[in-house]
Length: 87
Image 1 (cartoon, one colour):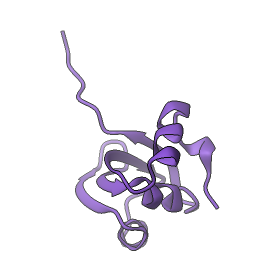
Image 2 (cartoon, one colour; image 1 turned 90 degrees about the vertical axis):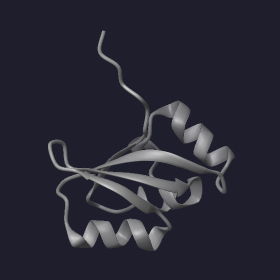
Image 3 (cartoon, one colour; image 1 turned 135 degrees about the vertical axis):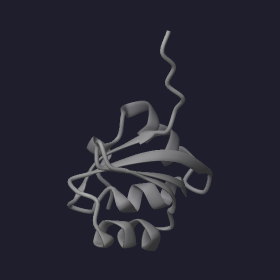
Image 4 (cartoon, one colour; image 1 turned 180 degrees about the horizontal axis):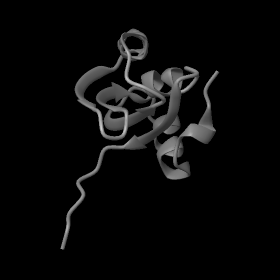
């Protein structure tokens, strides 16, 4: 079972339609912990970075792994990892 409410609607549609395609994502969590990191790895994610200011994991993962991870109680939000530019 997946939690679509933890994804932006467009990103949910994308990962659901392409469950085997690997994407870069930011997984926001209640707190960084070995438990949540292990859950991400067990779901099939490769952790690229741990973000401490806003507790998050930057991961590369197939859509199916992100959908599975969305059921973890410490996962708050899963969003695409995008470049942000200041003007």
